[in-house]
Structure formats: structure tokens, C-alpha cells
Length: 345
Image 1 (cartoon, rainbow, N blue to C red):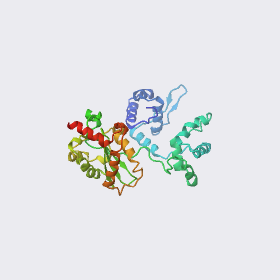
Image 2: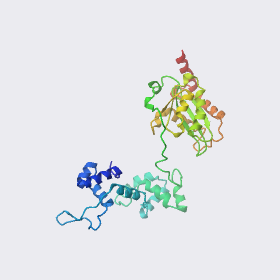
Image 3: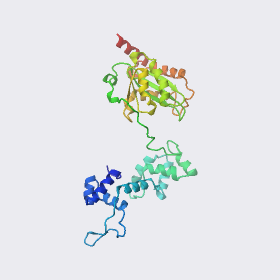
Image 4: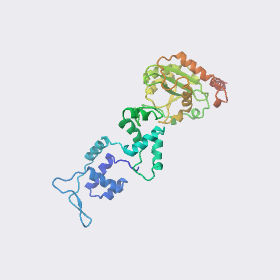
């Protein structure tokens, strides 16, 4: 992968290879790296021997002086420290003026970064990434100028969201979607559900959403407070348990931490639970589409802390009695009744 930094394992290989007398070219071939990458690493993180002159090139092309001592552990420590130090922002001078003018014209940082080479074709100094624009705007810029420029961003945010999000602990003992029976995938029979949480504002509650795959029939339940694993179990288990056995075939969920009690839910509710692959919302497409419809009633950022079961039942009824094009303009309630009649006849 071009541009990837050396890792600790590669630095250990460099240390052992140098001790074995391998050249920079040979070490590069072993690691699949260019020789200059290896040479720079040794120069940057190697240490000269005590009492010796630093290596220097002789007139005949050879090297004088004793080679630098390279230790992988020390090199890794130095590399980690350098990676953590604050980096100067590039957005200054004429480049900053040009970016500011384009922001005032409601251009996004991505549009600006992509257009600068065309606007200034002969000036390599007029180049910047959209991430640097964001960081410069939110970190360097202060006061009235910051407010004026951020007003022209589509999100109007005054800070940059981390690109990498929070690392979640993985769920234990899950059954992946790849092991889900074929009858679930082809929507052949009713009773197979997709589930998720529809979130309100931060700390403002959520709604459990279940969608039956064949009929798109919806079940909802409020989570007005927290949505930990125990909270979800307390609300989801009776919701599924209220269904007749013929409609408790399977449930497919994403890998959110709210499903930490999935094993207990499966046993108590009498349903098989499968988990979609990470970052694959299309594997629960019916649920994702339904959550989009529910935003008509609970927009993003809504306060759901006072939401009641009666209100969620009312909204579910509205969706279940609304004709759907994907069902040939039948309602989900009609489609579910017909599917149940076909399986029992």
C-alpha cells in the first residue's frame, strides 16, 4: 500500500536484517519497500555508535565511518512520539484568502480542494486537502471570521466530527447473516424480521423498529431513556413474544452494542437472531427504508423521552394501513394477512 508507514513488525525485520549484514536494497526486497524508505528509516531512527564519526560517503563511492545502531523498539517509540506531535496547518497566506473567498460563495471544502488545481494551474502552492480546510477552519480561525465562514458550511457546525468514530466492543456469540436460511433471504414466507433503533437527539431516547420482510408490516416500541443491552431486552422481548409462533421465525439486526443481550432475547422470545455484516445497511434494506418513513413523525434530533407505547402503536398503524408500491399497492396489513392465510391453508 503506497504511503503506508512502517509498523513494528517491519522495524524488527530491519533490525535483524542489519545484524545479518543485509544491504538496504536487500531489506527493501524482503519487506516489499523501496530502498529509500529503508534508508530514511535507519537514518531517522538509528543512533551513532559512541566515540565514532557519523557515516559519510567517500570519494570512491563507498562509506566511511561505523554504521548507525538500529533498534526496533526504540525506533517504534520514536515513530509513535513523532506521529502524536501537533502538525502545523498549511492554510496561510494567498491560499487562505482564496479558500475563504470560495467558502463565502457556499463552496464545500471538497469542491474547493478539487477545483484549486484548475483555478491556479501554475501554482503548486495553491493546493490543499479538504481535511486541512476543515481543520484550519475549526482550529485556526477564531471569533467573527470563524462564525462568518462556518455559516456557509452546509452543516453549520462549529467543530469537526472525528472521522473514525468510537470503537465499539464486538458482540459475543453472534450468528452472522451468512448463516441465515434461504427462505429468509428470498422473502418466501412471513415471520422474518429486520430490527434497528430509530434515535432521537443525543440522550433523548429512541424507538425500537421491527419490519416483517415479506409484508413490510411494522412493530414499534419506545425506549424513552437509555438504550443499553438490558433496556433493549426489557422492551424487545415482550414485543416479539406478543407475536404468534408462526411470525417468530428470525430477526436480523446490526452489530450495535444495544444487542449485547441477544442470546437472552433469543431464548426468552423464542426467535433466531442473525447479525448483518459491519457497515452493510443494505442487508437490512426494509428496515432502513421504514426508518426513513418514520422520520416524518420523529425527525432527526427529536425528543423521544416522553414517547408512549400508545403513540408508537398509532404511528405503526398509520404505516401498516398505507398502500405500498412494492406490495402492488396493498397495505402491509393486507399483505401479512394474505401471507399467513397462504401458509395455514
